Image (tube, rainbow, N blue to C red):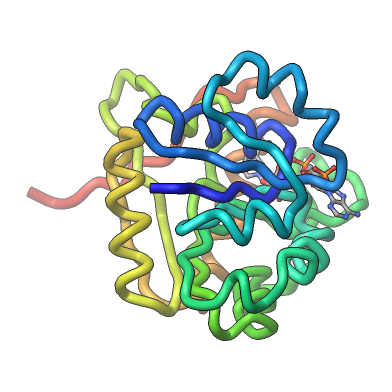
Length: 214
Ligand SMILES: NC(=O)c1ccc[n+]([C@@H]2O[C@H](COP(=O)([O-])OP(=O)(O)OC[C@H]3O[C@@H](n4cnc5c(N)ncnc54)[C@H](OP(=O)(O)O)[C@@H]3O)[C@@H](O)[C@H]2O)c1
């Protein structure tokens, strides 16, 4: 598939490399394509352009930008370029204020989520929350002593969730499909929980796993 990645940071680069490794074509979109020159030189087959370029080229899109900027980036992508496409939403609604005793602060409240806000503004896009509850270093085919970790996903479109589940399987994850967009209210705060050992003890090498009764 042709994947359009909106973003240039650690998540965008990690997932771009992962999609290339698994044989997909990738176009990354950023306000400053020059900043990705060295990364592109190391990754043959990677194209870099504007956010609109990546959104237009991608059959499946990945949103990997700062949470506060997410709506502006989707506006720059353009609603018509998003329409009908699966958009993997990796973002977390991190506030600009620092963590409190290791607990990150969100700009959303408990009965709300960034995914729902984005889906509300872009109803024709099929957003699926995924990859937000683990660090970038463990997103692509991570190896853990306890076996494959679990990625929790949510979004309104059943076919889009199935498409993202297939990609997650390729990327070495078990998938826990939590259903419609409101489930992102529970999935986004997993990022807060995931970060606590990092902020407290500089431990970042973990992931969640959902266990099922035999
Ligand atoms: N880092 C992780 O391990 C991790 C793990 C899970 C989830 N996440 C989430 O994934 C997302 C990406 O994280 P990240 O660490 O890769 O990158 P980041 O540092 O959170 O964000 C960098 C990206 O945000 C864009 N951006 C920042 N301010 C902007 C603005 N005012 N207007 C437009 N675009 C703006 C940048 O766009 P340009 O390219 O145009 O400069 C860049 O692509 C975040 O929402 C984060 O919470 C991160």
